Length: 368
Image (cartoon, rainbow, N blue to C red; front, side, top):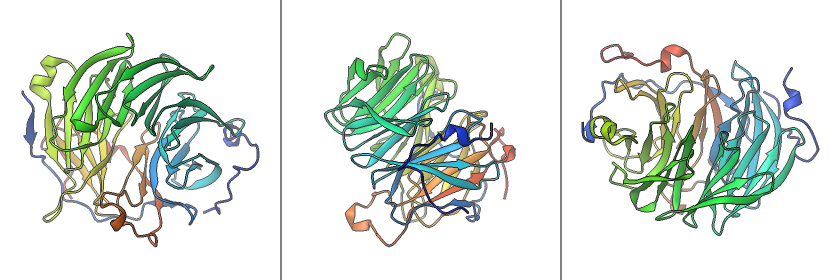
């Protein structure tokens, strides 16, 4: 593994480094959890604080992975199909990094955080420039390729749309409460706020479409749109995931929720949701240090890994779904009292064969 000598202090081109029913609960038919396997670890600087977010380049020709941490750093690695990695560059924001997003061509990264700004990192020039600002920390950011706009969601109870050519807002939506999570896919955007509110947007019309209450009874932790852009999954602090459709007829018959990331004594937070780009199956990660693969359409649990020994705050599949990245860091679910500064943050890659993540009808799920 190469040493972590990043190139953040000098100009470089990262791109050039590439060699050209009504809502209801359900019980899942599930395999036994596997013991944690030695996934491939990425070398993270020992000075790194908790990793809050990560994002893969959506361009399959450029296997770049970026992470955002509570030490204000955005770091970039190039990852080979074998899972081996090489550190490429690093940038610093003015506060902890809460979310990341790429442009569809993989040329730029947007990093938002506690300094109330969103910065654009140009991968070709290695330059950082401000493109958005709010009156409170920015919790979520997404690039809307169809509109060529940036979407930011903040604790100031607003969502704003930005033209990155002028760095000016071109639209704004008032939220009922602070933005806790946000996602967008195609013409659909969804925002989860405090108070269990979910606001759904029609990006074609650039307007709010609907407000609904989460099917989950506790605070929302994460949200992710289906690949089909007709619904979304939400995760909460109560160890539960909800599947919700936008269309009312579909919602009445197909909305449901299920328990996960629990053991005999504890209920753990669901920290992240990641949909597989080809199959539409998804992964959850939790404060229990586990990641689990699911098939929502057939209501199966596909693969369950044993605990990695530390909470997993964020995760994601690469552009072709063959690699699954996840961080192991303290996620603050137990407050400051639960923080152990001696426990280092880690980053790992799980090679994901199709057999692990392909949809399986009931009765055909993996048995281990």
